[in-house]
Length: 586
Image 1 (cartoon, rainbow, N blue to C red):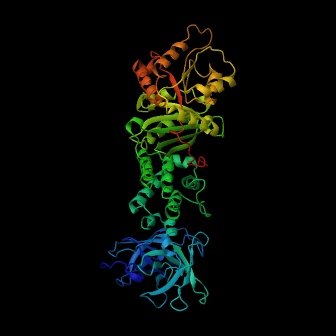
Image 2: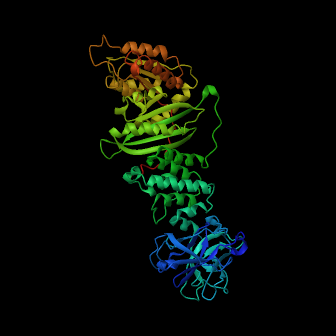
Image 3: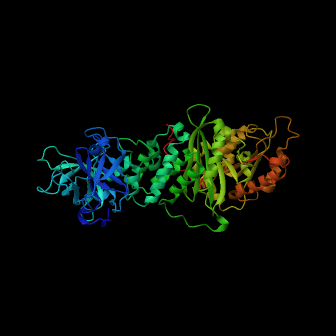
């Protein structure tokens, strides 16, 4: 078959096709060198008798084809009235081109053309119509009205015909039905974006903002990888909930019909949602359910590459901003052994969720370590590293610093980057966060921190008075024993709130305290850290930990700081955001 000219005005293009299936005739249009789209009802009843495709503008040869995909149509006005035909051999005809979904509508509405093959018109005939707005009928069709009172109406033989913009021939939809009463000159069109819902490959051809065809093709492959994985299937995560995460709590609701698959949700974000970052949030969130590391990285890469706000200007090297990885572990409310774990990364003022999952206690550590590794793809190269664990109060003494960095690296997490802990309830308190911000404004103008020491065995005193006193004059609280041994002092430091609290994770087991190392620990603390600006504490403690790790196997207890814990919280470095309404796990 000879090559055809490109699309021309009026839709008079070689890619228009006449479809014959048994005794049924209809229309179709070429979208690749081998694929033709038509209505399922044109080929459904007699598919076993064989399907023939003719391109009247090029010749009269009838080319054999077979149905390779369909939209699920069964009968009548059922949804999914789409069939994809595959030719036995490729053709050299230039395929149809598609317009963006919104171009079919306007005020005044654009003139639309359809090229059909009613009885006695084997060469085809044109009909002029317009779309009655972009409102979908039952989430599926757009109503068509005749452009004028005369001319060719839609009739049998137009089913499957492309609906094109009259001025340049680009496709906006496909004719699926016409009014039974010939006096009523209207019909229905399946818009191109609805067809892509049923045949994802079509989405590559439909313009959707900044997303290129290659990006959408890659996205489809990644979605298939996730959907086939055991993690996704076992999580019972609804695509609709991922969609809500992507658009946020105040974004557009999902369609009334629901979202049946990952592609359905992704395509709705691409074709219907104006927020250019929504799909990126979707793919980044979905990566959490991908088992394959390469595919997981690719999903997050798609999220990074979509339109985002420009990066803020860099601060001078002496005042480089933090680029933290945040790990939040909170009770899930679904059982004492179930926790909602969220890992995210900050890049400037922007926070990106890397993973969010409800897990049992034993599942928390491997999941967190794997997602921290993923989060480092988002860490700003010009920022200062920080891994911050937001933990319930009873978990604050957890030895996260000594967690093995990965299954292939036995070195402690605390030897890899500065690690701090943050108390969950304090982070969620608006009053305490406000006080912390005020405190840090004061500390910015101060060269060193004011250290308050509380040794092991010290009288607990009045907790209210201690809280008020710490609030008024303390920048750094040093405890000579683990929180369980100085419970009231630890509680007061969190409620004050003191920006930084340091303590040994292990230590005195009880009275007598004469041989306790509490005072030595506090003396060392004052010598090494009290003269530093509080903003430098994470890096300074990191250096101390490296010294301790070098002193023996995993510290070996030889160094005074071998089990040092640092609670450090600067709300400016860890701004609170609410990127997701909740866990999308059903």
